[in-house]
Length: 189
Ligand code: 5GP
Ligand code: MG
Ligand code: MG
Image (cartoon, rainbow, N blue to C red):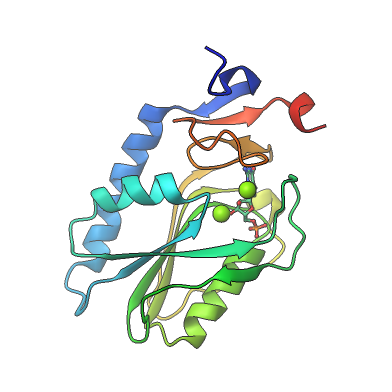
């Protein structure tokens, strides 16, 4: 079964079942925290990597939500950030006065999130929370601050490997793997 790219994976870190259980728990926590909000919160997925996580997450959110996307360019096809993210596709919805939940696949240096949080704050978001499937704290370069009563939700702490699957790519491939795994180094060296 090599068609999907499974043969290029050295080790599976989180299986489809483990991810599903964790996403359900995160959605339950976020639903509790958003309960009673005066207007529907805006869930903003960071394209493309967050598409699968965003879809699974919002299915389990128990309040009405608005779903939107932003696109940020910072990675190209390599495995290292160039450190200067730019927003190439902005949200479609007006976020002024809204609770925004930024949904990310992985937080690495923190550059992407600090850029996006500043952007949403400048548009008048009432709060900005961050919900990321993975966090690689070992590689953080920029510490970002949430806006208003925004909270930080993280699925799993990720060791310092280049990971793919469940939305995360290498050179636009492997996003459709239903698990998160470590790519064999010989694939990108
Ligand atoms: P940051 O701006 O925090 O350095 O990078 C965030 C983005 O870098 C993530 O949204 C993701 O697209 C990419 N990234 C960081 N680490 C990894 C990784 O291990 N695997 C993959 N596929 N992308 C990563
Ligand atoms: Mg991302
Ligand atoms: Mg990528």
